[in-house]
Structures are given as structure tokens and as C-alpha cells.
Length: 253
Length: 253
Image (cartoon, rainbow over all chains, first blue to last red; front, top):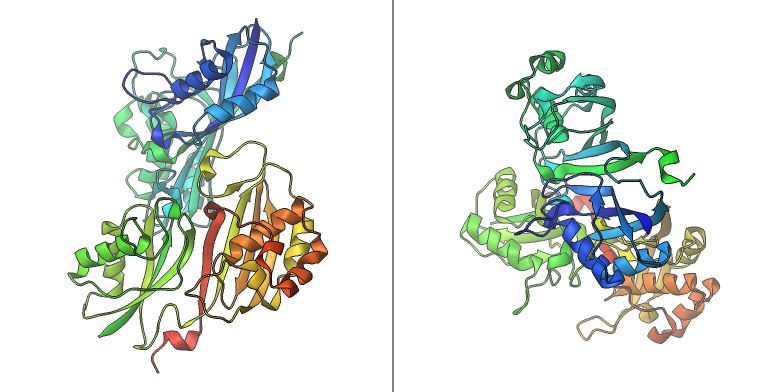
């Protein structure tokens, strides 16, 4: 049996996240349907992460074992033929038998996009948060720098029964940059807790509004109290941007 | 009576162009509905141009006379409240009585966006032409340079009974540039004939495909024969990018 790794990209506006569920359309469901059409086989898909409804992905990884002998290049073309226009398979490669898109993942980068102008952009509807009060990206970048490092992120996540009890994550990069009216917060870590990027973003917006002092972030970590952080920013601005694997895990010995 | 000039921006995917028509939703119709809601008055709207179904605008100008005394800033906010998310009013200003968004217009710039990669982009669905065969932007830029100047564009337009018999237009700028996978053709002129930018684009794509020699463009102008140019490129890649007026026409004496 081959173990295949697909790299996708999707506009999440129409979807209730990645994970299949009974009463809503998800990216996993449309990908599974396309795989059934192409391979006449319904493989067990492992996604690199759950994503919330309305969240986008510039890169999302999925692995699955299959009996199919269809070459990778032809599988990409065939899947794109059957997938809706807001989901695209970028690449397919064969990986070692024990590779798992989620468990083998060494880290991810998310980007949160904010359209910071008085008037909304018709081209960013459902693709960015519209925030009209002027943001000072230098101030927010300095605040975001305090996210970097190994911290207990209890204050920055929504409690989730399915989640492990370990709330420590290592953030390796956190930056705020402006490009015209678009302000982007990017953050990389070895793993993310439920709603973590959206709460990190909401906290930056509270810093911008003067509701949280920029130097209060270490105290919020220490408090382990969700109510001390800012609100959960809405999903439409969030993009899973990159997924990292160890090069060695992608190759057979 | 005041004469007001609105600057809009819209994602044209859902619309059958600007101009109101009986059995399809147009941008003029949704703007008119918003104006009725805000001003309890149905002004006669003059758009800077007709646009085809599915064509977008980063800038589109509309003028109209009104009895309303609502200040310009408040009108922008109120219209954006009533408009759908894919149409936004960027600005409003009072202009001289005889200003007309179409007749006062001195020129326009259009941009045609091509996503040039093997796999489509989910984020550019209905917002760019997906063209997978690699494009050489240097070759296309050289071909586009031959559009610059005053020419008879009979070969590069769809005949339209409403159109004047004068097919000469002055193209002041025509360039092809690449930014990653996105290839953009931008063209400015004192005026455009029906489908002109889409046919100029289709001709560049024929140059890329070797179906038209790059140096054949002067001969196509001379032939005044639509069948010698390339096909009409699809509407979803086309953006009205800028609309030019004489500064003096925008100010009362």
C-alpha cells in the first residue's frame, strides 16, 4: 500500500472547517468525494489540523494509505477536475508508510489578515477582518514579539475536552507587518491550541485599543486565565500558511 | 441641486455589469436601491462606463444630481451600510453642475489578471483567468508596447450598434508584468471600445501560443479586420483600475 501526502490550498468561506461532520459541508468531505470519484476507493484521510469554519489555508496537508496505483501527477490533475473551484490540490508525493500528516507535523505558520481602512474591500469579503480604527503596526509588532518563546498558553486558548492537558507551546516567530491597508500578523509554533491564533490576534487588537497594556502580555501568560486575554478574533481573517515536516520523515530510508 | 461624484470599488462576479437591465442584477441597480434607502430619492445615475458581466472595478465613478443635503462623509457611511459586501463606496465629493462621470472622463486604466500556474488558485476564482501554459512576460511586454499610440482599433473591438463610428483611440500605456504566478496586463487610453481590453489580452495570449507573430500587431491594426486579432479573453480577469478626470473639471470656478 502506498502512503500519499497531498498539499491543498482552499478558500474556507463556504466550509465548516476541515473535519467531516453530519450537517455541514467540510473540506474533508469534498476531498473524500473527489477521491472516491478518481480512485473508486474511500481512504481514511488524516488532515494536518482541524480548522474552524470559515478559516482558509494557503497550505494544508493530508495523508492517506491507498491501494491505488495512479501516479502522483495524474492524481493531482484528476482531483482538481472533481474538486470545487475553492479547493485545489497543489501537489502529491509518496511518503514512508508511517508518515502521518498530523502526528509527523513539526510546526505550522498561521497568518491573520486585517483590512485596516475606513471602507471595506469588496475583494476581501470573508477573507480578512475589516478593522477601521487605524492600527500602529510598530506597536503591535513589539507586542507580538512577547509571544515568542516557550509559554503555557492556557490564557490564549478555548478549553476543549478533546485537547491534551499540556498547554505549553513553543512560538518561534510572531510578527506584525503592514502592506498598504493590509495588516498581517504571522505566527509560527511547534503546535497550536484551539482558537490560539484568533485569541493572540484579539489580544493584539485589545493592545491597539488601549484595553491591554503592551507589556501586560507576560502577566497574562502567568495568570493562566482566559479572561485576561483579548477576545477571539473572527475566523475569516485566518489562514493556515505553512506546515512543516522534518525532511527525513518525508523520505523512505 | 448638488452634483455628486461617487467613487466605487466592486467585485463583479455576481453582477451582470454596471448598467441596469430587466432580468439580471447589476451594480447600478444595487447602488440605486441603496440611494433610495438613504435619500428617499431615485437619482439618475451616470456611470463612467458600461462594464461587462463579471468584470471588476478597483475604481468606478458615478455622478448624479440630487436635492439631498446629506453631507458627503455621511453619505459614504450610509450607502456602505445598505450596499452588499461586494460593492463599496470609497469616496463622495461635490462637483460642478455640468460634470458627467462618463462625458467628463479623460481616460481610464484597465488591468487584466492572469493566474499563470499549473494549478488554479482558490483565492482567484472568478477574479483572474487561469492560464497554465507558462507565459514569457518579457515577450508579452514587448508585444503590448505595440498597442501604445493613436490607432484605429477596429480589429480589436466587438462591433456594437450603439458605438460611434470613430474607432481611433490613443493608448498611452500598455505593459505586462509578473509578480510570482500572477501576470498582469495594464493598459491606459483616452477611451476604450467594446471588448477592447479583452481582445487586446486575447491577442497577447495568441502571441504567447505562437499563433500570432509578435511583430504582426501593426498589420492587424492596418487590416481593420476583427478576425485577424486574438479571441476575446473571458471577463473574470478584467479590472477597471483607474478613471481619470481633469482636475479643473472637478472644481467649481
